[in-house]
Image (cartoon, rainbow, N blue to C red; front, top):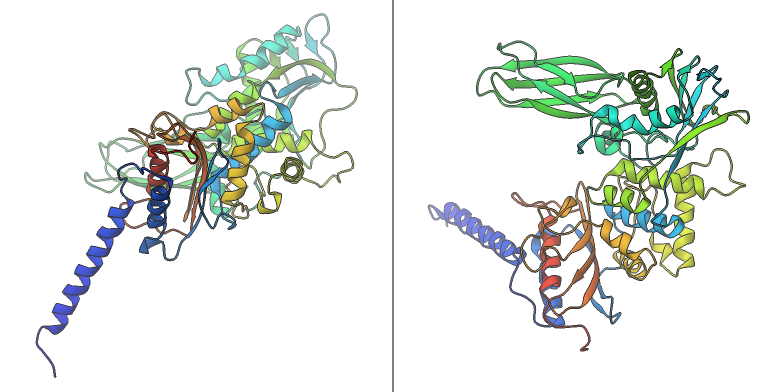
Length: 514
């Protein structure tokens, strides 16, 4: 028998039940009062992971006391997961273990002939790159040209006043492709996937300012804020009427220099800033150094040119040294890449390690990346860490191929907590509510200024691994990895990780009584 309105009542009931379920999920996800015991902590975390919204997602979690060695909680800790930028923990640990925090990357400056009594080099000057990531002005107080002061100073000290040949930026020391293993094609058009090169500048991307015209229907004005990039702009923008939606997008086909800029901005509105990757960054570096020298009275008669692997190096046995430029200490380089989660700078350190640790019998085609991944496996095995659970393909975590486990990551964190470079490793991590990718996360007691952890984020992937001191004064290491998560509207997936970190910071009892 048919009852009028039954379908409407059923729909209303279903909607109410769905709303209650969503409210329950949200209530579980909200930070609660501190857990008084480890058992209560476990129950809270279990409830967090068991939310219906994670039905299609994967969790890998492990939490261990650095003092007692006791495991406070684990959930599929041996499950292979995509770690995203938690990969940077492995790169940084390997670098500190093999090189030490005082290590500096040294870039030789060479010439094909010695300067004569007039300061003239009859030949070429060669900058032989080693992957120093520190040549950048963006985010600091110095201007673009001040970046090259160390190179100008080195040539001036060598007495060079004129070069009759070319300025050569030689990036062949890295046996490296411009992209990391397992990067997606989409990555190559964003600053996260800037090209890897032994000679880099401004993290190999520039800023494009897009400003609406004063007249509706006219193209927007385009201005690249850094010089000599070699980029060609194809302006397909338009200025819209007041109230027009702001929509600007750039596209550069990988390997080409033309950047197509699409979209519209409303008349009278503010400008838009886009980041554009620069192809063959060693060539950009060469062109900029040549002008920087000219600005300081050192003339280069020839051209600015570059080389990259597998092209032949410009350095020969007859080259003479003019000087060198040293990077900041490795501990500072790691802090500069770990806190903002800078991909290129991590991959440069990884490639540098690969070349430093390249086996003498390695074939010519073996990439720096392959050498570094082999060195990482050796490091893990030699120190009793679960190398079989680590499948890292490149240094930054942008790769879709990289896999590891929460168990392996916690083991690495435990190892580095007692390492001779433990302070450099820990200090490089973002600090909750203070700096890096955690500066706006985990704010307020008990996590702020307490949780030191590396974040990670790819599509459908979030991770957070590091250290925290509980309210009971016990130092813990943890790894939280969430894969295949499609967060509901209003949430990103990061909150789920942060809620667990807050629970750890607020834990009121120790794993073992002192």
